Length: 307
Image (cartoon, rainbow, N blue to C red):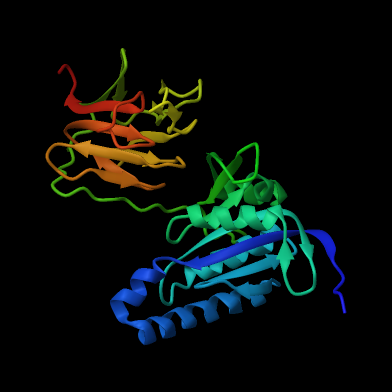
């Protein structure tokens, strides 16, 4: 007996446990399985509670569908706000899928799965199609990222990060974490310090307590970076933002490939939609490590005015 197949638009979500392989190695099979199962049971409860449909469990993750992107985003919010167990990362896409009654198939499913693979621990990513399907008032909770390539598609897919996990809630506020660099000592007086950036033959000075300064490939960025390495583009159109926060210069990554910071004799760190302070002198790698030759490298120095 053949099942009826229909095609309809859905908000498709993949919710995966972060670092499940390491979890099994660290805790052993039985303890890791119990922890992962408890986390997935909680995820499934939130999906049910927001009108979602659980298609199936895929490894240490859940493949689900919702009637609206708003319902999917609200479910993602509650999953992240109740971190009982390992963190999860989530990808959401809005598109048509073939439904045979027990499973979903099609390009939209592949895109959602790919988006989830890119998301960081504790992060929800949405495609442009999913962002467009949100009510206009809720789009303020999104931060636009860059385009990514998806296998089988000629054109890329633009991503948005759900930076406000309290979507749909009144009085919500956006918070962001700060990656700490060992040995970093921030300057104390905002009136005396400036950040000097060098890229190719261009020199820019960013004043403390000034407006945010944007770096990227887009022509309207404050510092336009070609962002190529080995013949391929690695930097995003709006790759990173530099600003003065809490008596120090901070760089915030907003890219697809990440931002590397090499400073002094300390280790090179990579930011993935995170923020970190800049101190002393060093280099930023937009989309690839600064040790590799290319036009993606920006040199920086935090100096006192007049230096």
